[in-house]
Image (cartoon, rainbow, N blue to C red):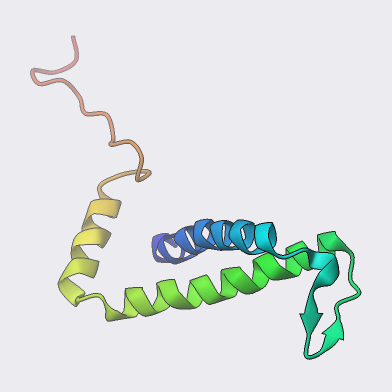
Length: 99
C-alpha cells in the first residue's frame, strides 16, 4: 500500500499545481477540443482537467518508480517499515525500563 501512496500522492500534488497554472491562463468557457467548443460547465471542465493531469502525473511517478535502482527501493521499504507513518517516528521506551 505504501508504494501506491508513494506514486499517487506526489502525482496528486503535481496535478493540482498543473491545473492551477493551466486554468489561471485558460478560461474553461473558451476551451476548444478538436476544433469544437467544449460546452461543459466550468466545474466539469476543472474536474476533468484535474483527472487528466493526475493521470499524466501518475504515469510520470510510475516511470520514476520503475526506473529506480532495486537498492533504493529496498532502503525506502525498510525505512517505511520502521515507521507507522512517514511524518513521525515511533516512540521508543526510555533506557532502563519504565519508571
